[in-house]
Image 1: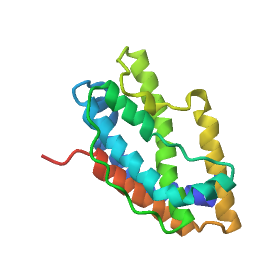
Image 2: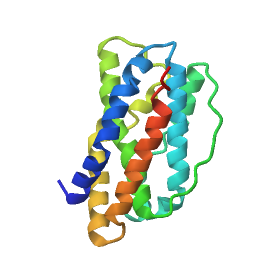
Image 3: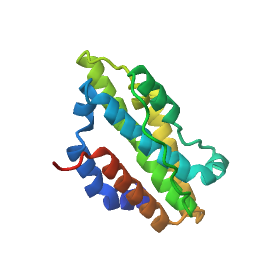
Image 4: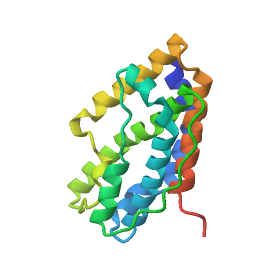
Length: 186
């Protein structure tokens, strides 16, 4: 594992773990009554990431990588659930390519967890209405993730992105995910 990947995982381990334990995402997605709200929060997160990385899409493209745009799938999921999407609040563009890479790390990595959750729901005969966004790449998810990891290592090693910027982006994106996905304490 490359130094940038090790550093990013170490820098985000606590918040990543907090999201996994405190957001209770899978239970909330399995519960049809809670699902629309949870899917709506994913829409807010993905739209924010898509807005923030928009100026850097050509840089990703130059590396042969297209960051996923899951907001259309999530919108379709909300429609299938009969739920209205939350209001779109545009996110500010990120100042560096490295920060954009950190943000993409968070949402691209979430596809790995989404795939696992979806498989578990299929196994348990849970209806998947509105959850197509969890596994948009199917069997290509693993190779897509590896391609992203290679991009991150390559641009950092070449100096096209700074490791500190990638760490900041990853931490900031996980912070946003925590604020959006973890229900407020009652």
